[in-house]
Image 1 (cartoon, one colour):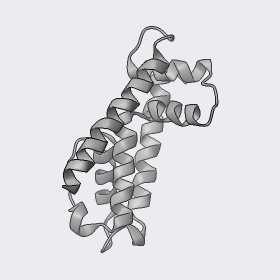
Image 2 (spheres, rainbow, N blue to C red; image 1 turned 180 degrees about the horizontal axis):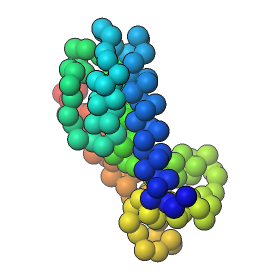
Image 3 (cartoon, rainbow, N blue to C red; image 1 turned 135 degrees about the vertical axis):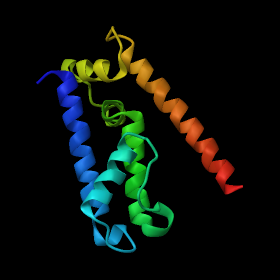
Image 4 (spheres, rainbow, N blue to C red; image 1 turned 60 degrees about the vertical axis):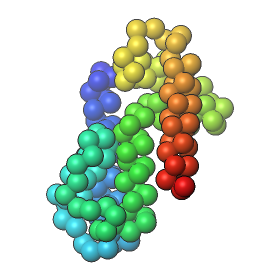
Length: 137
């Protein structure tokens, strides 16, 4: 399967799994329909910000956490996140992983991928940390 098709499939699986997680009774205050859960998960993974339910009122803390994880995975990209996890575990990213990452990040060369992923993660952590700090004040 070519890298673009596999990436699209992975995003599709993430959306379906996210929708299923949002359907859990512990994730919402009241039951939501499959279409609402699927729309919410798709919106989170694609980082569009659209919602047919109010996450602050209709979701429990677990549901909000699921939504936040979906936004993070969609925003950072599945392969960026996977490379970060593999790096933290001390594992190497193989040639196939590099090809998928190169496709997702739209890079021509392989040698700049890992520094780019590290830069992305640093910027995200700093920005989200500052945002959390501002919200706490």
